[in-house]
Image (cartoon, rainbow, N blue to C red; front, side):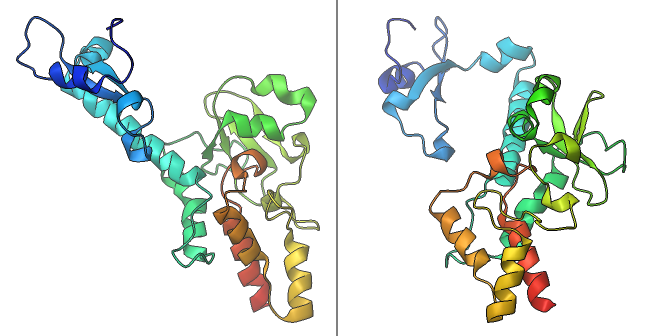
Length: 247
């Protein structure tokens, strides 16, 4: 293997036949997944077809395990993907709502000890970006979930541990947890409930959802880093706009 450069398409082809009994057989491994746009040649590396057996000793069962793991990761990517709009480019409530609700369909997590609500998986990076500096050390390990219950003060709780963080532990206000202004809606670009309300009072409609959607399409959002839930902000923006317009 060391004598061959990374991405040797011909080497992989030549050694991919299972009939080669005196040497290992190989699959094409991708540095960047083919489904994610990864190409061939330099993106390929020889990967032994015995990899899964060597890792787990279960043969085909191990392949099924990794396929299920990949499916779970794709679901997580769907939740985290805040750059989805319809073909016309207009913000759609259904798209945003799916992004907001898909987390409930992911792997089971522990329930919030305060409200007993089911949490949504959230990356530790998101948790660390939200916490006050003096609390960072408490979240350096473990996996966390986001509690979306509006009347519950807990924002994050550790899935397999006792750590939990409330609204007072965060550096920012959590729109789902507050009822007085300002009520954050879009953490990437600073829009809150009052921006939409004032615009509707002045013009009878609001352009905030369209503005946020346009910025998302341009790839300028950072919801995973700025939104406490780690999810797309557009869902809450659309919900607020619909509610305030109806009022």
